[in-house]
Image (cartoon, rainbow, N blue to C red; front, side, top):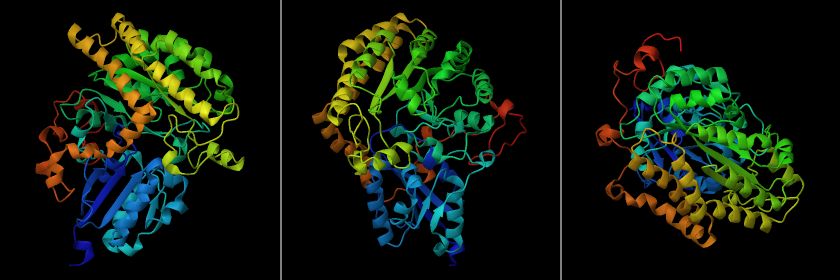
Length: 505
């Protein structure tokens, strides 16, 4: 049978370095795969990889801490004659390094490049090779194949949805802007259809956008539509979004229950020198404004910049204690390859290691700060994290949340108490095992065993699930004109981004 007539098999593999919330990167590639392929998605922390089954094309995505594992997996597949493609942030930063381990490397957004690779495979697999960097047209993308993600293995509160791509900022420690060619937005009808097709068991969704509100005209239009049939969601936005009370109120009416922002530091010099374009003196007002509206304020904090001193940990703790910010995460600066920070630290001889497995953040220090020792930085991060997530402080936050009658205001008193308790006390356990060295060591070895809790996988000899094997409550909701979104946005054909009904959205 000629190769062009043969049904090919493509396996998309992600190698998370911990049990992260789901993203849509591989689901978007699966949606861009031509219909002549059978395709599957494998999350190596949530599903056992069947390595020896026949497959023609493998795409592997991994972040910097797990890139060596990706290279080793690529080697094993190539030894069997399988065409291997690598993608993600790390290989976008270092395509020449990655190309030594794969047949092809996809830089940046992957849909157009992946589709081109698949089309080459259908003609002659020998055409596949080199570095691909093509920008997809967001107006003509298929809906992400979330049905292939085995979503039941993730939390019911993090159903992934995407509305925009890219970031308009240029922070020295971040690679996000370099993954895309400018900030762009999907058609609003595309976003609404993702939401409408969520499984019924999903309790909340999360916008995986780097900055959902970079274009406020678009965000207002989107939130206006969401407010017509609100469903709980969390989002990431820059902090200035929350300086405007009208923005927060519009988000609340749309269903927003969590606003996550990269506050990064209380040290204004660090904010200024890293290109953050933030004003730390506004932070307390912002947190108060968000939480008084009944929305959880979530802050991401980073330490180890050249202008940070050991006293910053105590100052940050004082701010968090007094502001009663409901959720926070803490990490050292991670100078990922490709960022200005990585290039500067390497040039100045201040990189402590280029062992990518240590580029995990939190208290794993990989560079030498200017105003404290690496040991002081690691100890400070652990101290602040465990202080903030102590049982005593989380109890104080739980009491503050209970007194905030706008938080989870639609719940019965018993359900509200349950959610507030879970919100706070789960964090105590979660961050203890992450930041206590002996427990973190154990967790790092137990996490890869998580997939074996799905006993049925042990009996399967393939990662390709037939449509009948996908649980009914994990399949996309069937097309229907009864949706409150359908008349305004049009219903999208299964697997296609085209709208069947005309829409101005």
